Amino acid sequence: MTDEFNVEGLKKDYGPVVAVDGVDLSIESGVVHCLAGPNGSGKSTLLSVLLGLTRPTEGTVKRPASDRIGASFQEPAFYDDLTVRENLDVFRAITGDPDFEWVKQVIEVFKLPRVFHRRAGELSGGYSKQLDLALSLLKAPDFLLLDEPLSDLDDITRESLLEFLDGYAADGNAVVVSSHRIDMFAPVLDRLTVMYEGEIIRDNRRENIDGTETVKRVYRDAIAERE
Amino acid sequence: MAALVVLLLVLPATAGYASVTFQHVIPQEAPVAVVPAADTTDNGSLELVDAATVTFAQPVRYDSEAAAMEALHREEVYAVVTVPPGVLNDSRESQLNLTVEGSMVLFDKPSSAMVGVLNYRLQSDGSTSISVERNVVGPSRSLSTYLVPVLLVSTLLLFAFTYVPYNLAGESRAIQRIRTDASLESLVAAKLLYFTLLMLVPIATFGVVTWALGYGITPISVGIVAALLLSFLAMAAVSMSIMFLTRFRTVGRFLSVVVLFGLVAFGGLIYPAGFFSPIRKEIVRAVPLHYTTIIVRSEMLKDVPLRLYADYFAVLGVTVIASLIVLEGAIVMYRRGD
Image (cartoon, rainbow over the protein chains, first blue to last red):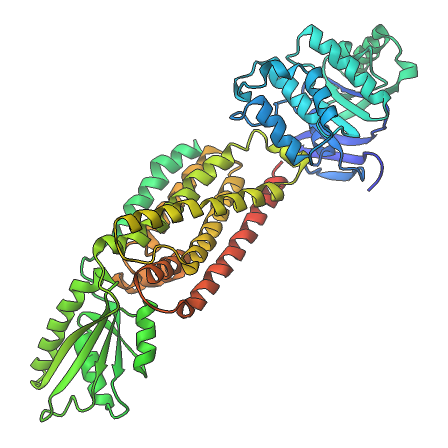
């Protein structure tokens, strides 16, 4: 056990399909770290391996000693048959009854009181994502791993989420997001890791990627080199 | 596709094959204890009775009447024929006793027929001085009361192999989050505990209904509850294992129904094991649910001490442990499949 995620020589294949190939990566606290890449580049698989949901074919994965790890998935993960409130109650109980004030704050950030009594399975795509994100934050995780967190969100919610994530990382937490829409994360990211066909082809810190246009250019150039 | 294969092929095949279970209305090879009434009963007399019995039953020798009666209560045999000394001696009047339990309703008519056949066979062997009398031990029950334990066990069986898989399938969408925030084992343990305790409701309901119907049976006892909950725990663990192994797909639910059919056909639920052919008898006795039914039937309908079934409880305990190990294996395989 360590204080951070660390993977070395990570490989994951599904039969003949290699999803992640020889990845070395560590996740740091206090930064918004974006795993970017086109569809099928291995971002989701990498997150899944980090979360311990997928077993790597090769390589080592060191997970932090802290069990305060939150995750949001490409497909929202909650109980369709329960209401939003019931889902929050169930996962609050599962995560060990977190601080009430914090939970209240999370619920407000994602505007969930408006849909408290609706069945989760009947929510729109946007609210489904918002509920999933809220559930990932219930235990105020030290490590927050989000897979395509901005998909289905409207512009206002997207902006408030980005602002929230920026502040959350500034409080010393690790925020890892996977996305193929790099332009949206550009204003808040501290680290950009570009993946392509399962490999890491760029890993830049904030000092090298300041400004949205720079981020977009770094990403575009990295992909163009491989295509 | 797999679900359709199970629904259109496996399920009908199982249901069709299950029909072979019900071969006879009157049992032809039911085990019957042949026991000497006294130390002076000679082997020749016992062999004569064996020979007379074998035409309609499977004679099993016991050394003492007490052991034979215990076997009767445990449903290892369905009648006890007590052979007095000197059956071969034509000059003496001999009376054989054929003892059956009043609670074994399905064996009531067959045992009466057996007495007639036994009388005919023994007398046709030239032993005109031999007569056979039928005795009934324990309270005589009606078919309705006989069915109460059968239906109670069936209710739990149905719940374990239909609702439990359905409920677990409902977790499939939330499973990734549960795996992140807790463990699959803790989820499964919580569900097993919850469902097992929930089974107290149908058990109590059966108790209330049978009491209201004035059946005069023992609707609830420690033995009944323990046997039913242990069995349910094992069955629920098996159905959950199926769901994990099929990764919560619809085919898992259909496979659970196939297992349900299999247990109804081969678990000795309705007809006791002794009603079947020798091979099928062994199959029924290999199914732990068979012992649950015997314990529940005995506790409800008979007046015998629970200690008689200590080894049956041990079978159920071992089954629970084995099914939980299988479940853990299924969870491990589920995780490896990601």
